[in-house]
Length: 562
Image (cartoon, rainbow, N blue to C red):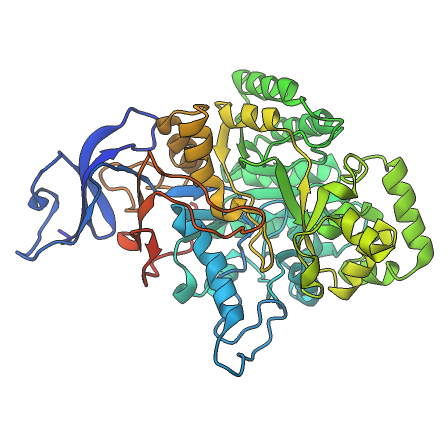
């Protein structure tokens, strides 16, 4: 019997099932949990060897399972960087005074989810993962991923096993699972060309996907607004989703349109799930842009009816009215055909810029057209390594200050930054966000894009914001319901065995928080401020956060979903 390593005493247990809170103590032995009656002797959970057992005092607080962030883009945070690595270029070289500001910036990004209680992240969303790829496509894919993840040079992997091996354990403070990104898969087989795959190419994609899922990847994701994913038709996705279905793993989709054509795009996702047999997860469900405001009044009932009719459909949501993505996604899809190098070469030509302006003004069939649905005044720069002074400012204001057209400003900014620019889009309405949060189908995902600069505050604040603002202050969710959306529901959806519910034998991933004080502090001006009210976080039985501050524990691992 494993020795008892830790006791969590005096708290109210919200166990992740949605059941009412109840008093309970917890004992941790061998990285696993035993639930004890309040005040029970530690010996009831295992051998103490007569030694004093460390205690986390949870008196007056709530104890929950570790939160599961089902939608992140943190794939590369523990695979790149190290002391002396420049966060913008990935090159070595600490400052002369010894202060390693780049390393500090990466560490701040890594800590942000942990400090709000996230013990497991699911990456590889929106069609972008760090694997899989045919060997001959690796250099081309590396350039695409450099722009996507914005952390300097990124080394893609041929399969999930190689991806897992590349994660540096000394940097893993929490756990990481990963989906297989369809955009990466497509680029890794056939590059960035806008055409259907040949039969042998589709077969190669299915084979790579099958291998990755066998090795432990958590499912298949698509980002159907992002090249090269946007070049795929429904039949291609159905063929791949059937592979996921054979493994019992979900099809996770950033819809082809979340704006004026969101209902049509949702029907495509439902069709893919019906034809393939794969469980459907609708990523960061929203109805954005003025032409789609209020459409959740129709999309949510449609999803609920589909589930009532037997389709296994769920969704995730972040608690903000602004989204975040790469700047070049604001351009029509044809501009990115051939990859990032081809895009940058096109942007130098005046006639290309004129065509971009015309397409934004008039639209392109099948393209979401974020700017056309909102405007450059709603788009702010989040990260731009070549123009740090632009970060935090709206594109319309930056262009006006420079006396240039916004499209010209955007093209020049992308050229200066080699394509590596992230933006924040203020495109949603509060009532739509509230409806999705309250839906019985929704779970919580930050959609965090952790890059240096001024990233969206959702990376550091989503879970605390749901608990504090929408739960306690607004009364939109009970504490038990909010915790279930962060723990038990996502663990069941993504087959994270032993996680998401506090019960005997569960992995000892735990959060101790003050339900009367928990709140997000991160803002668009200061996006990485740590939340308040999260007292302790335990990862695999080790105390990773104590009194709101990170410890030296590095107990995170890559989770293989079987």
